[in-house]
Image 1 (spheres, rainbow, N blue to C red):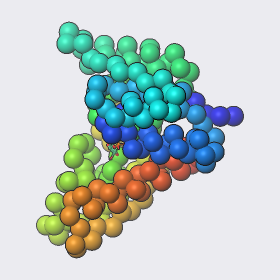
Image 2: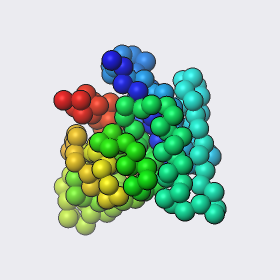
Image 3: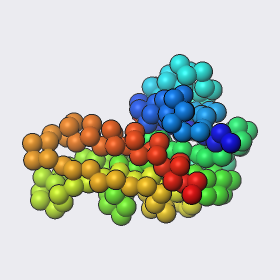
Image 4: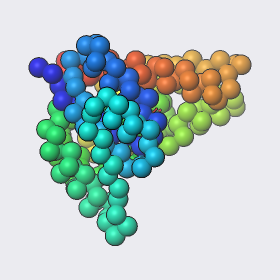
Amino acid sequence: MTARLVVLISGNGSNLQAILDACASGDISAQVVAVFSNQPEAFGLERARRAGVPAILFLKRAEQTRRGYDAELAEQVAAYSPDWLVLAGWMRLLTAPFLDRFPNRVVNLHPALPGSFPGTHAIERAYDAFKSGEIRHTGVMVHLVPDEGVDSGPVLAEAVVDIRADDDLAALEARIHAVEHYLLVAAPTAAKN
Ligand code: GRF
């Protein structure tokens, strides 16, 4: 059975691209049936279009509450009958009106190890912690999003990423993204077990 994936993005979409490529090559038995973004300039929307995947820009209206937006987003996403919702650089916290529509089916990618650096700028914060001698490595995780906790759900996959003494932030970001592209593709298989 080919798993139906809906991917939510807010930016470049390099992780979306890793998923699209893995689907196209048969590395994973899945298909991206839609891509949603909350950001008009997200290059990930262009990546979807190039792959022939519906690319939906879903903006929050000024008068809309966060929960109202999430409920409406859930409605739009549900129309694609997803088996999995993949948050690949989706930079908005999702609330219960969205999450409760897809129990145990929302997966998030976060560029840090479980319990470390939840929230935004995780790579930068890890880099600063390394520079101040607090940590020797960082990592990446893929986890379920059962509730409104920030980067805190049950972990499906994780990988340690070394930080090197001569790294600048860009070098660490590149190393982390390379691991993300691998881990996110491997995680659905792990998730099925
Ligand atoms: C990734 O580092 C992801 O873990 C984080 O946002 C970044 C998105 O990168 N949540 P991209 O848009 O997939 O290139």
